[in-house]
Image 1 (cartoon, rainbow, N blue to C red):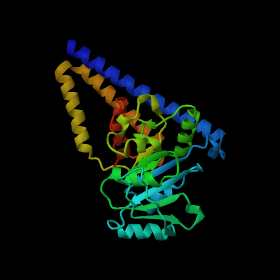
Image 2: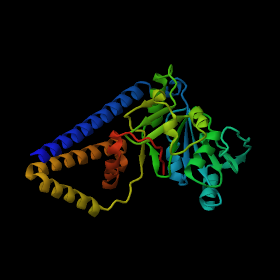
Image 3: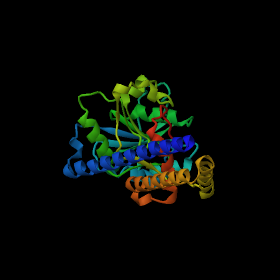
Image 4: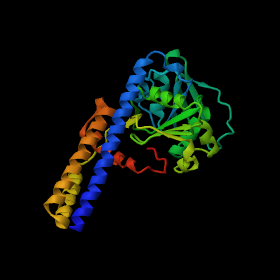
Length: 311
């Protein structure tokens, strides 16, 4: 009886947390849609908040074009790529966007921000795109290089498999403009593991690192449940997941019989439903079984991480 009580209590807590998380995501997404619809066509005036999307490992033309497709006016996309590691991709990007090498002044703010060359497009339609050529050491050094040339006060780091949700830039501008009287150094969405850093905070921390979040006081952070980014679908094998679920059910039966099995099954169904709904809300055009399963890990955002990781 004690084991049964413990299992059911634990599963109730987990289920309640998942339901609360899902409702917060839904409400945040609805609020974003209402506000952005009301101010359509004038998003550039939202407190004059500017954001630089800084990317490491992004080398696909379609991916870059997608990142440039946000309607918000005050943002740019900075792509950091090593031309010696990816010479073909680098030439393709410079040719497609008609980019030319421009002067790059040395930057003393970040010692790790060593830049080989800097490129901008000749075409006004691609004025938001900046290409940085530098030797690849790790992702954090790439982000430092992008920070050194960023034009705006806020930075949104993206990895090679990360994309922007629809109206992501507007969502960021709305949230930060509403907090204009308070200095926000970190704006983050645990829903999609998205982090927007104030540029000064990155400089003061000595650049990006896995521990940069710990260096930002809690009072200077702002959390949202609005979806901001999503990832490419990942190849996930069904067999291990089925084996894990079967093992959980068998363990529950061995500890407390059929009641515990039913409770575990209901919780699993709730998790699957929440993950599926969240994945459709975040990325309706890319909602597959793989995408849905990847949100199982993000349900763990109930417990806030203190490390900044990006792939």
